[in-house]
Image 1 (cartoon, rainbow, N blue to C red):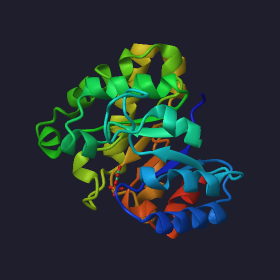
Image 2 (tube, rainbow, N blue to C red):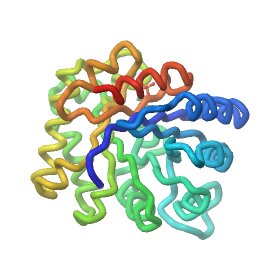
Image 3 (cartoon, protein in one colour):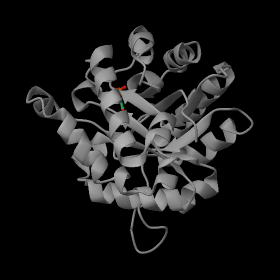
Length: 253
Ligand code: PEP
């Protein structure tokens, strides 16, 4: 897969099915860009209808999580196979909220990566440091470990379907955004790690998204950075107008 510009919305636990369908319709109707990919990430319950609304458009759909097995006695879980049968192409894995509230470890995330890739999905793998790690200036080592214990365990051919999202936790949902320079520094660092682990071609082909309070007002400066290929957007993806404005910024760079 070649490097792409991507605006991916993570709706988290927001919207009812009806509201989510209305939001998807507004995004599908409003999106006309050809130079960037738009992905919506609703809760599981919305997926079948959201996929239906997106069919025939260029808007793609992501699940916010998946389990690492395709079937069995795992009450409450949703498998990659169920998702692909619905037509869901992308899955967000390792989001900091899953790590924090559901104790997901790097090895859990690696198992989920294997399961999702095994069903032909494209994972959006999240990494990023909490505030205390940033304040101690050990954020590079923290992110390196997250990647080494998860995606860097994958063979090079599988990595071709991975999108990486760098999301400093102190910037998620806080209104505090990393400066464009801070984002670029970490994106370049991550791309260099990919280069060291998987070679120049994979490093150049991997899309690395920034996540953390991306809004229409700061999107252009963040997306202008050489190693920032787009955004994973939470709050601002819940309104079609702001999400489309961010996606259009990316489309016109
Ligand atoms: C996210 O949910 O991944 C995120 C970056 O949220 P927000 O844009 O609201 O900070």
